[in-house]
Picture 1 (cartoon, rainbow, N blue to C red):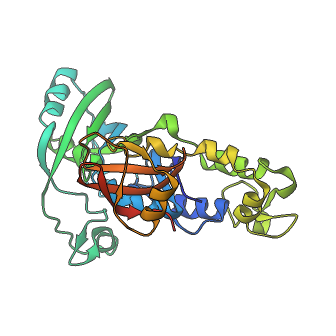
Picture 2 (cartoon, rainbow, N blue to C red):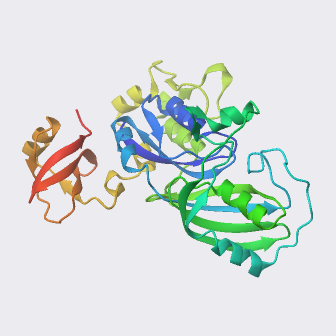
Length: 332
């Protein structure tokens, strides 16, 4: 199964948890994600499956959009609501004009220290592992970019915001630093990712929806879950009728269409790359990694090459004119 599927991640799961559950539901080993979300956070988590996992290299610098809540009055060791307080709680009266002025200072390219409980590495060791062992965590400041940061509303000691940021930006650090600037402490109380690159919440589905499609697309091959787990997101999926892995029996049934409808249409991926449909001769050359002439007359340096409407077979780089070299071949 070669696809991009957008999951609306629930709170309480790590991004890796979501990947593992999708693997069990789809019986597909080759699944990855396009950008970690903290366990507390919810929202857009793009999953790539099969050969399309190789597209991840094009999304490493993708910008993200968030909505969330910052609570003022005390800081925590994790910079979010899951951590232990590190300052004494105090009553806070937030003034909209002051908070909006402070938020403006965080827009643009700024210097930020990542949270101690983060995946940033110190001499090859993730910072969170050192922090859990109560060892010193000395992370270096890094430059990040906050392209938009808007205070949407204020409710007592909480500020609701929307932000659009470059890759590598920690909204937990933004919350912590705002609390430090106001000398009252603050932490990120909630966070929902509403977009990653071209993917938005409008594209997203829950794990339960994914499992329901898997269970109901072909009733006589409904799924069974071991150890009595039937909530649709636990355990490996096997056909009750044949005992075969789900995707194998599902593919033989010819009933992929409903599952396909949950996936992002391949032509919507990497929208800055034009789409080109190759004929059979060109497809054969691309499969063997040879240069090929394609009917693409723009000046784009890279293009998406399709066989038919949905079969993305390569990302090709322009050599000269209409001559392209397949930089990344996605088909056998």
